[in-house]
Length: 306
Image 1 (cartoon, rainbow, N blue to C red):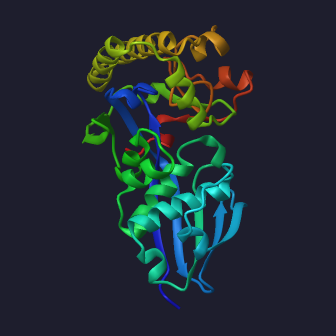
Image 2 (cartoon, one colour):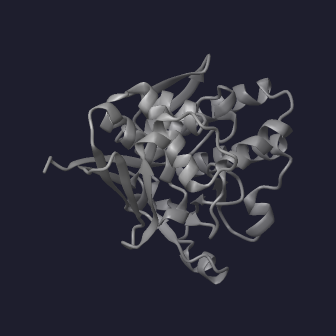
């Protein structure tokens, strides 16, 4: 029996620059303490037996994929989970044919360390793990399969804060130090629904108006966030960011629509209206959010890889 190989990738949160990162804005992204494992063992019958485990050890997806499905360039009618996985594997095979030429089959399991619905990067951690396994470029694999800016791949690969930017469609990643002295005033609250980032991105591209000016303003905010000396400054920058994005997206901010009576600042992270929000407040906001039915509240220290 060949050795079992294990790969791991970090989850992600986009602190500034959501949506506009696609248009070249500079964005601050933080890897999370949560992520996903990929375990690869040898199998048989020229096929992959695949099992995906959620953080509670339940199997949320399982399938068997014949090698021939990966090598045959058949376009898919619809985007089922299985079809998406096959297309990721097909793109990986095109980048490294050894996936199939050097094997009789595989038994593959994935294990999330966060509940799948949290939206911390189930797809990006999978793509980065597959890229590690096959020694191919994860950004290329993302581009040819799933799409998106790639900041999530950069978080998967880095164990600290990064500035992320697309330059002529090429990812530029800069490691930065972000250790705010007000971290204990920052919380992450799950909005009880997962956003589909593909749909959100499509909606953004339909909406966005001339945004060059906004991008330079948002870049300045990102730079300032990195240097924010205290909670008050940080909060005012987040608020400014929300207002600019609200104009671009022609959407109410999450604070306006759900938490208008909250004493503190609330910032959307990633696709607006779902996944996690960042809450900055002087007082511990747990009781407030629980009273509104939001039970998942993590401290900065619980969430962010420091």
